Length: 122
Image 1 (cartoon, rainbow, N blue to C red):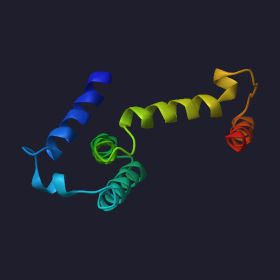
Image 2 (cartoon, helix red, strand yellow; image 1 turned 90 degrees about the vertical axis):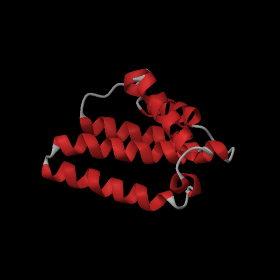
Image 3 (cartoon, rainbow, N blue to C red; image 1 turned 90 degrees about the horizontal axis):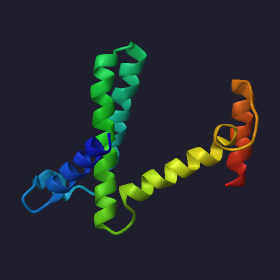
């Protein structure tokens, strides 16, 4: 999976390079908003329809929009995809203290309550 994700990052870099695609090169974080919204809607529709073949494709499309935004941010020295992934990994660990820490929960309701408590800490 690591190689597959790196391949997406490399594709985004290539598309935005001098030898890449003129449309991709001119995109900004702000201009990518429309693409993210459209792909998110298509993911939602596939889930609502129970169309898992299409969902697989739409998740890929949405993931690539995220990678493109990450690439643009990296070019602008705002942040990198590595930082995004490290941040979300740490957040998930911190918020799931009953999985990765010492807290105890036994129901989904207790998990949500602990999640909210942990969220207030950060």
